[in-house]
Image 1: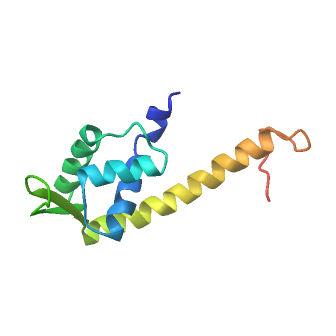
Image 2: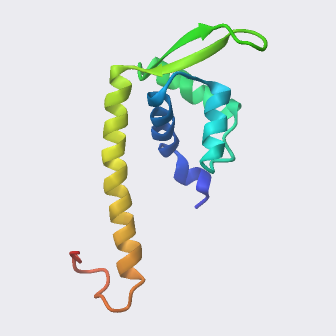
Length: 120
C-alpha cells in the first residue's frame, strides 16, 4: 500500500487542524504541510479538498488583499468544521492506539498472537 493511499482521509484532519489556528490561504497550507513532512501535497492537491470542505460547510473563505499580486482566498473553520476536527482527533487516537498495539504485540514473540485479546 502506498503512503498516498494511507493518507486519504487523514489529510483532511490535518488541514482542519492547521486552519483552526488561524486563517490561511492555499499556498500557506501547502507550505505548512511540507514543514510537517508531507512533501507530496501541492496547492493543486489542496484546493480541491478545500472546495469540498467548503461545500460541506467545514470551512468558509474570504478574499483579502495580498501584498504581492491578486487577492488571496483565506480559509477559516466553521463550528461544523471544529466539530469534525474533534471527531477526527478521537477517531485518529483510537486508530493510532489500535495499530500500535497490533504492531507492538504481533511483532513481539513473548505474547500470544492473533486469536486472543491482549490487554495492556
